[in-house]
Image 1 (cartoon, rainbow over the protein chains, first blue to last red):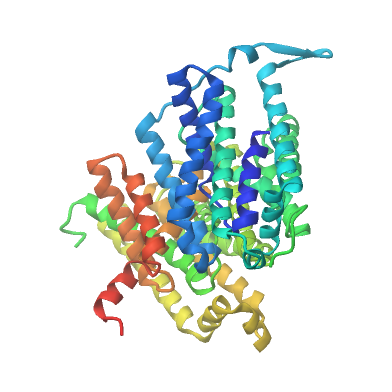
Image 2 (cartoon, one colour):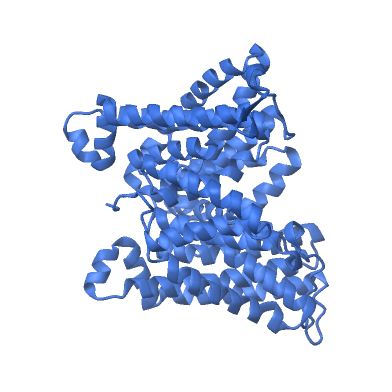
Length: 272
Length: 291
């Protein structure tokens, strides 16, 4: 579900803006640390979960406005490189502000226990993560399929110029989408802290897996992100159980196979 | 120079030369053929690992140090290139990245490749009459290969083949319509770049005396891309200049503050935004006032 939250943000940004945002992992790191800082001040996990994404969304909006916008005319390659530069910037910034050591926080008190499902017991926080991820997926689906804003977004994914021609302020939509994508990454970041703690390299580490999910599922496809994160999650878990030595290898193998069989991913659209 | 200067500047110069070879080979793809590869580290690392294995376990000869790593990288380039060039743009970036990560994962989890520690104790090859363990000799040795790679790449980009590559970058559809087998040209460029990257990787292994999985990690490709962009794409001097700037900045800034990555990131973003032609572009702009 973490992967899903991350990849959904990435795929939204790509679908709308045609930008592969390599700094997406840095938004994830930033979200985790912002969440830690806010939780340290307020002592409340929920406030952190609500506020950290807002902070990161603002950062994302600034980047889109200040830097990316100037590059739309120069094609996708310049944008990929730009976001790569931001990885260095943010990762070092995080190290500077919060130091390089691993930090953690406990899950909120009401989710600290475990729940019995049939014969098995699960930590309730992990169940919460799954439910929360599904809720976000549902909300996003409603937003995209059932609202006017969603219609504009889908139109923008389909044909950007035509949408602009119909009188939609595409620039504002772009900034919004980038900010929302960043916020989703930050949500994933905050949620991840009680499970796996926060450290400066966490973004770069998860970025590659997120990219794989998005590519397997099809760039720009919400459904694809969900399918991709499920496939990757299963492949990793079973891979670790059955072939512990080669599990890392397997996920890349899955991606290569999918891409060779269906170059646009499982649910991808044709490239323009 | 290397005879008078201390060892630290010489080592720095050797590192710049080796990364310069690597960055030049990447620029053949990025600058000339318009293929942004985030998987070039695959060949750099492969060259390093093959050199390490051959030098340690087979024979400390030039064949293990140069020939086999380059051939191995070329074969890998043929396979990865054949599969990757079928897609373009963002998907090409992703596929190359996936392949290099695959090799990283393989090296990371294979015991006889040293797992996460890599392989230490890589000897330098022994040549008749020359002791490469002496810094000046090794410096000359690196310079020879730097010159060879530079001349070879220069010949390539000036040849009709190089012009076709530029044509593909500018307009692949038109080149195909005119009758060029676009994908075959791309594949050849990919293999050539892989061979030279493999050479650079093998030199890097001999320079350090060890190889580690980090050489294969995708951020290594990213660093080479930084060098290419900072120096200036579609030139051969640019990537070398970029390598010098990158490594120079790294050692200079890191002796004052730990924040060199922050500064590097900011510098890089600045170049992407305001100086897409890189350092060389800035120099040329200063030399000839715009009409």
